[in-house]
Image 1 (tube, one colour):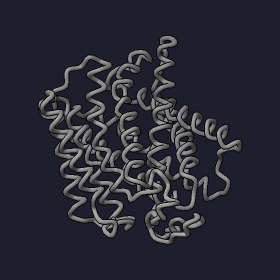
Image 2 (cartoon, helix red, strand yellow):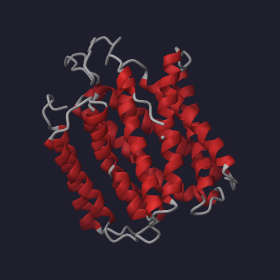
Image 3 (tube, helix red, strand yellow):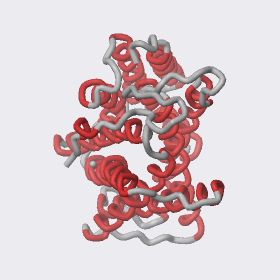
Length: 340
């Protein structure tokens, strides 16, 4: 997920909002009017819910692949399956929010549509069109560790490309602690099947994800983040469906259980990314993305619960990893607001 250089088109952050902020990052709000998701409890709660939902995707995809007749390493079918899943996510978001708000959730201007389209190219279409072929050419441990570097990449992109926040020693220290926790979880897992191309594709998908996080924060200053979320899923999902089908992918649901898994995957993506987008619209990128280190922890725990898998890391290492990741989150989120 060619990138548009948005630095020459930087919108006025928070323009049109009640607080009237004009900085390149979420403006400070008075305690009385502060959005719940801009507070520390709201950030922690929202981020952990999102990460738990994303963590559940790992075992549910493993359950879903055989139910849809998708073989391990069949990247075209995996892309097609992902496209169907994200198309459902977009439809669920658009329909549900339209009903709640009692008005259609749709782009109201050409700029709304363009921003949703750009997001879809990075967050959904580009990221997953690169991710699945990369994973099929990589070991699980390599893919997991490269994916975990997403937090570093996002912080660097926010600071050096978008210049929406400063790159500080505390942020780097917090990211390093969280990354160490992810590595600790993966020590002992098999690294068989690694190829340089696979690693490069997974890394490229991670860059797409980091770029989309920064774009989401920037665009949310002037556009409804939930609208952007729903429509980028729909656009990106349809793009992946076309790409997977043209590449020879196929899916064959085996019954109601398969459809149930697909609906759940569609729901979790809509709920997790929608909530994540709201968090990014109210907080600096680094404060939110550092929670991404929790994804593999939830993934390991839920895989053990749902798939009866024995993780490579024992209980002691899992606890130590959780401590390191928690330390990283605390260090980043306790950084002075002037550093953000």
